[in-house]
Image (tube, rainbow, N blue to C red; front, top):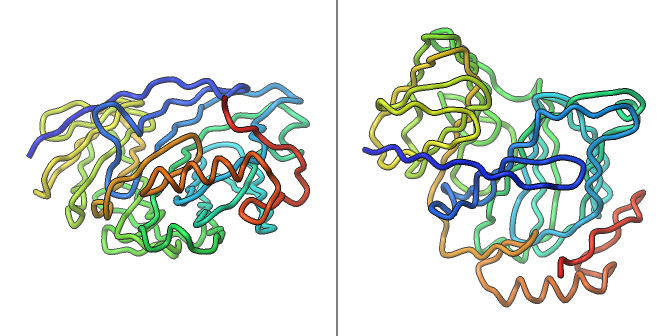
Amino acid sequence: MSIRIIEGHVRDLGTFSVARILPAATQRQVGPFVFFDHMGPVEFPAGEGVSVRPHPHIGLATVTYLFEGAMTHRDSLGSVVEIRPGDVNWMSAGRGVVHSERSPLHLLERGHRVHGLQIWVALPQAEESSAPWFRHDGKETLPEITLDGVQLRVIVGSAFGQRAPTQHTVPMFYAEARMPIASHLQFPNQYPERALYPIEGEVEVEGVIVKPRTMALIDGQEPVRLHAKSAATVMLLGGAPLDGERFLSWNFVASSKALIEAAKDSWASYPNAQFPEVPGDDEWIPLPG
């Protein structure tokens, strides 16, 4: 058993910055999790907010989860939904989808804070060319339990004897733990690859202190016990290893570079059959040079 720490690096997305945890130079993925961005908390004045224009994806599922604020998701499937704290959006890109994420009008009209996570899960190779789909699960549908004073919400998959309704097709789990100071929590060990990420507060695992904006990678499947050094909110994640290598380029994930190059060529002629328009949002992000 060993614990390895990776630190996030700041990426400027225009109107706000994120701490990008995965992929890292020393760790490309954790189970099927190939991308992990921590956004905020960021304070927007009236008239400003998140404004991510329509952009494409292939070969992955996006998982959006907020702690503060709200965002309106629109996609080329015709989905329009406002995600609020505790809800979860799962969008499976398959062979191709386009979406945008923007602060809703009722928040733009006044100052507001936004704080959340954007995760990508690589699809199994058999689903890389599948039809895209979208699902929203409200906060009230996600299982919540309390163990030894720790409040737990299972967002995706199975953990702590609970199973989230979020539709997914790879063995994995993703959960939020709110830990009072000095509390303890047994980390699920039914998954070969595991990690934890404090949103706020500090936790200790196997003698290693883990601080916010760092991810602790747990090597081995032995039982692991977390200890909260302060009141802490911690994200727990893990899953089975991927069924082969994955390549990441811009917003594309695939098991072959050829699929990514084909997607780039297709996006250059947006809109088209692979990447249809997003109804109600006629902007778009060009392919980076």
